[in-house]
Length: 291
Image (cartoon, rainbow, N blue to C red; front, top):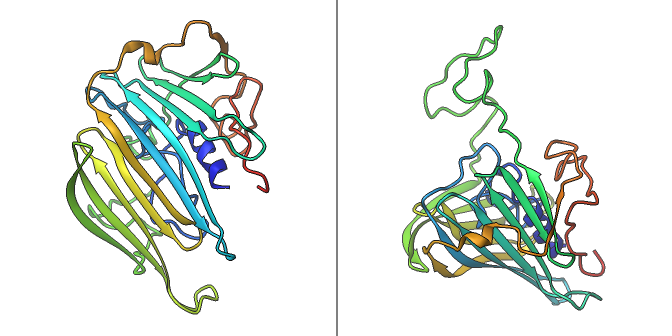
């Protein structure tokens, strides 16, 4: 299951950002969005003038009741240039009856306003236009409320209506440290489910730790320890701030370019809850047997 979630996260990496927090019983071990290696979402400004290349290794480990250990690993090679163009190449090892590893490549180009998926096995490039960000009008950030709204201003820092502070969640500032030659700031979020909340005889504790580079605007390390899911980690290696070659963000010679045949990125589009993979999509590799 975790390998399937990993592959889905790559295809959904260009979808709106999902907030990251401490993993609970229903949390996905690898949610798409930022602050991860790709770090782009619609409605968010691309990161410019901060080029880098790095390899990110994500590992999911789970122990079954009979003591069997399940381990799944995926490797991401990420490059971003000064224009904010980002390329992510993800390789999944062979699994199940499939003896070949799978590679998926996604190129996010805010200059051309396209997202390109390279289907390496068939040498096909599927190109999608990046939709215009929503919410830039009256109801968008900085816009006045619509006529008839009786919204009242709240003091800065006050909790939103309907929200409540969770006394079972604690956030710890871990300060800063150097990771792969880059300074990163860290925090740890601990969530405790009290005893007898869900039939548990003792408290259940999950932890989420992340280290983020303010310079590169990239998450360099992450760790999730969750009794429901096991342990999930992400580490970085081979990080360099050199400008990547421009050809990385172009469709390779010999590829056939196709326009996407889906409905876009909305509710019924690519990645939406009602969307389906179409002929032009690059589906994730099949999950391990038994999923």
